[in-house]
Image (cartoon, rainbow, N blue to C red; front, side):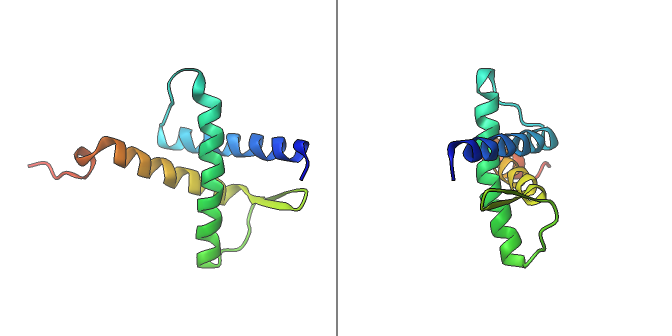
Length: 100
């Protein structure tokens, strides 16, 4: 994999992370927006790929960059799941508490 392919994958991961942030309503503060989106997208790609492989889901929206395949739908789903879990952990017990 050369530098151009890596940059293309990071841009795609950043877009998928930004879509997941829009779905969840997560907005990082300040100038960190793009960096956080890329990190969320990369981690979401691993989570989504693992879930798809575990359940034997077929590739639906697959993009190939060099010899690496990236499934956009599973990347967005993995990123969304990651952000939901992070928001639940950040909110602490308030998110899981039962109101009386």
